[in-house]
Amino acid sequence: MRCTSLTVLAIGILAIGCADHRLMQLSDDARWLTAPMGPGIIPREDSPIPDLPMPIGFVVLADQSRVEIVGDQRYVLHVYQGQSPFAEVLRFYRQQTARNDWRPIGEDGKPPRQLLWYEKGPEQLSIQLDRVGNIVTATVFITYIGPGATPPAWAMGSPTSDDSDWK
Image 1 (cartoon, rainbow, N blue to C red):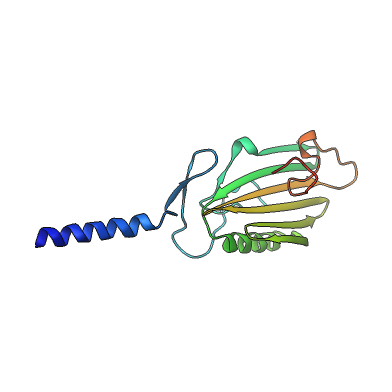
Image 2: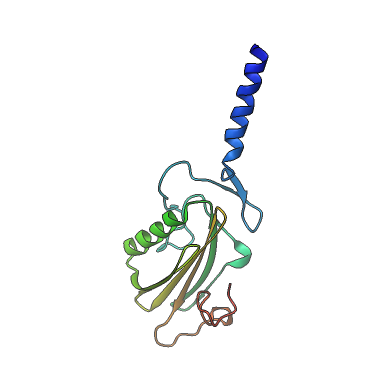
């Protein structure tokens, strides 16, 4: 009887643990993503873009990301992946853009894809959020739009515009 009870208990624990398939998943570049342990998303202190933090638990997809500085002109394309609820990621970026003085200029879409556009000084920011299963991909694109803009070829257009070759 005791052996049967322990077996049933062990199977129950395994079933509960396996039922939450969000615990560990792989990013597009084969790195482990872990599900958040509590509510809310926290910005990383060592974010690659100082005025637009990356969420803790998200990873940079390096092969899809690039940065180029031309004088005082900044061109950034960063792609992040993480395993957080879509609504929380959307809320995170809305809060972080406001905290870092990005002025909203538009939004479009609804889950599983949402597009956000902002401006700050001579720069424009677009954020595309995509959800596939439990993984959210954030494509962050910053481009200089001021006088004398000389974007590199890869930064022509926006990864969130319908007329580009971006995803």
